[in-house]
Image 1 (cartoon, helix red, strand yellow):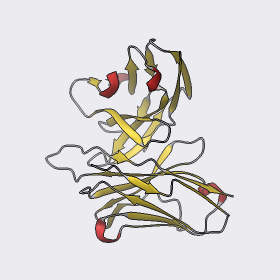
Image 2 (image 1 turned 90 degrees about the vertical axis):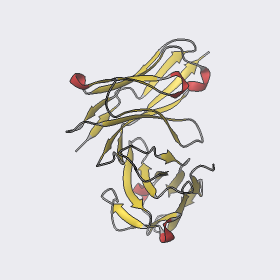
Image 3 (image 1 turned 180 degrees about the vertical axis):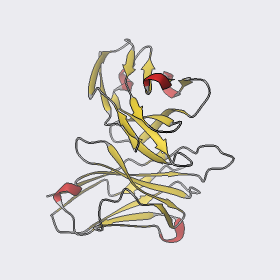
Amino acid sequence: EAGVTQFPSHSVIEKGQTVTLRCDPISGHDNLYWYRRVMGKEIKFLLHFVKESKQDESGMPNNRFLAERTGGTYSTLKVQPAELEDSGVYFCASSRIRTGGLYNEQFFGPGTRLTVL
Amino acid sequence: AQSVTQPDIHITVSEGASLELRCNYSYGATPYLFWYVQSPGQGLQLLLKYFSGDTLVQGIKGFEAEFKRSQSSFNLRKPSVHWSDAAEYFCAVGAGAAGNKLTFGGGTRVLVKP
């Protein structure tokens, strides 16, 4: 099966511009997560969708970030307007809904490297 | 709030030598613990996980990790490193009802010398 895909792989934009990142989860995975790794720091959780609903968005840094998952398939993460500190690698992950008390592995995409100049 | 510390930012090891990566965590409840690896240009791949039971966990690619509650540690080991093990390794704690929300350490980059 195809893995988690993310587009674009790289994006370079000017401060103040808008950027939209896309994540296509593995087919059948209702859980979708966004994480971010700012240069030199750890990977941090941004938010979690279950199908099209936001289950947990406690990691979203501020209201310049908007995540959507219309129809419960792919997701987009929009940054508007972008600031210098938004530079980093944005990862998407997906997993199946947990059943029977078992943990379902999160499968990660390769990430989108965002550079804000 | 949970946190994860990986004390070693870089480690250089000779091919064929053993490898141990350290991970310490802070979490109030019984943790879900994970090790991920990221090779260049790839996404994070799960090496192994611990939820409960046997504290020595076997993973893929010949890796194992040992959970030590008394030391709040979950160190990753491999007896004999291959050149393909050069990558960045991340320890993580899963929080929430299903361990869904992962908190990562800063990562350890492993360089393998021939």
